[in-house]
Amino acid sequence: MREELGTLGRKIGMTQIFDAEGELVPVTVVQMQPCRVLQKRTRETDGYEAVQLALQGKKSGTVNDRPTVGRLEKAGCDPRKRLIACRETRGCFSHYQLGDEVGISLFEEGEKVDVVGITKGHGFQGVVKRYGFAGGPASHGAMFHRRGGSYGQRQWPGHVIKGKKMPGHYGAVRRTVQNLKIVRIIREEELLLIRGSFPGIKGATVFVRKAKKGTDKR
Image (tube, rainbow, N blue to C red; front, top):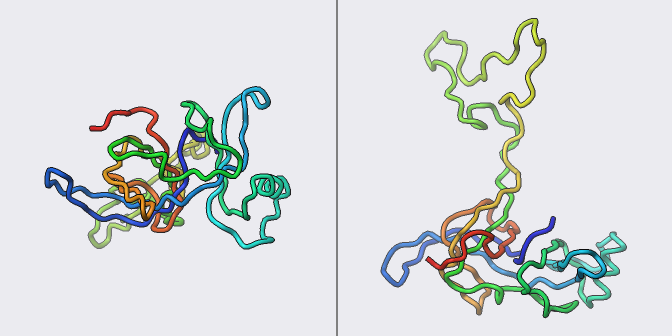
């Protein structure tokens, strides 16, 4: 997964604060745990510029990927759980070297960010919960309550058309919410207070990057 400038953090949950005008603002709290730079890719050697970041400590001896272990040793970094590659598009990673930490210092209060997370998983669900189908009559004798209705086309074409909305796996997919405003930064505790909500359960790892579209501070 290659992203633009950003870093990984842990979603704490939602709360609300008052801004300078006294308006009540709903915010999501993200703890931006420092990420280590494991690898740098350059245009001369790789054809593009990027850095690989690692988040969260891991017990020694539990990493089996030998290329990853080699990068950890070169960067002087202990074993880590999560890795992500970030594209260099704005010159913000040029001064980072192997082993350096990337964290909350990337962001400023008032700027816009995009947050990438994994939605909550709901397992195998029917069409009413998965797609919002109305279902059938709720009265006695209807025999058709929460079903999806007819799926076939009789003799022709003789099969269910691809893409038909049917029961199946719901949730646990990657989603991005764009242009969320950073309302407040608590640097002592490495916390970002971001206006609004975004996917991810409490404690989930999310990727926070500088917004690709909106750059104003409104």
